[in-house]
Length: 114
Image (cartoon, rainbow, N blue to C red):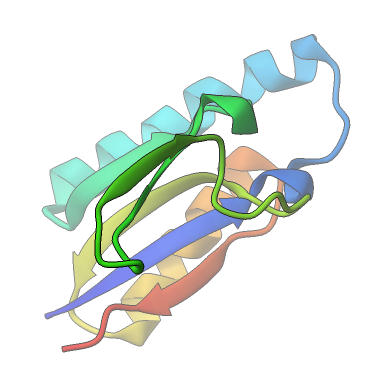
C-alpha cells in the first residue's frame, strides 16, 4: 500500500456563487464517505481560508518562536486535502478524479515518501 496526498490550492477554486458551492459540499462529502467505506481514507478536510488565521513555529534560529500569520505571504495557499492509503498510483488517480469531479476544481496528487 502507498499513501498519497490529494490537495488543491485555494486560488484553483475560482469564483462561484454560494448556490454553486452548496451543491459541491454534499458531493465532496460523499466521496470522503466512499473512501471510508473502501478502507483507503486516512484524513481529509478543508482549511481556514484567512491567511491571518495561520501561525508559524520556527526553530531555525536555535530558539523556538511562534508568530502569527503564514511564514511567507503567498497568493497560492493550501485550501484542502485528503490523505489516502491505496494499492497503487492507478487507485490514487481514481480517487483524485472523483474528488476533482465532486469539487469542480483541479486536484494535485503526491505520494508520501517511504
